[in-house]
Length: 213
Image (cartoon, rainbow, N blue to C red; front, side, top):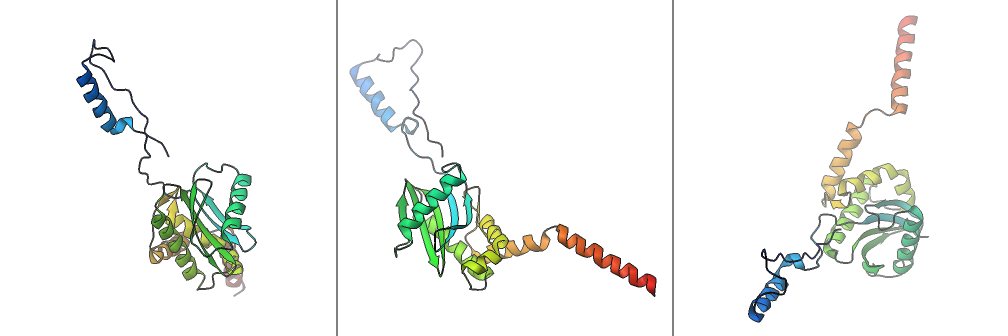
């Protein structure tokens, strides 16, 4: 996330930076202090989410999506996930702060769900993403939100995550809309290699039987 940089004030042509009376300099200083371009501040951003991941009850990764280079390598990501798991898996709270990041989380049977944002991020926004993720998966897995069921439907789980967040930007927070879009994408997806082979085999069988008649 970029920060606005302080910019030097422009002086009138021919005027020295220290020129003018004491009153003028004081007024200029006051104006400069109020000039937002001179302040260091964090600009509002659509890039709300830094990462989403799901771990099992041993802290092992089942699903993970990172949206910036805070943890650029898989090794760094997994080290971070282990630290988060160690800090959260025995607590009853829903929010944690670690390594300058805000983390909201939720557990279900043998799964732990995490949404990560910056230290300045609105916790309610992150919690809305977490709730949407859990409710969408709960619907997709038919209220059987546990490790085996998730692994059996991992492709669908990734689609759910992609419908909620894209590149760190929150796209959807309504679970019903997420499920509808996921179903549409599955129904509208092109034929896989396996399904193409099945179609060709079926066609061959039909031709074979038509020739035998």
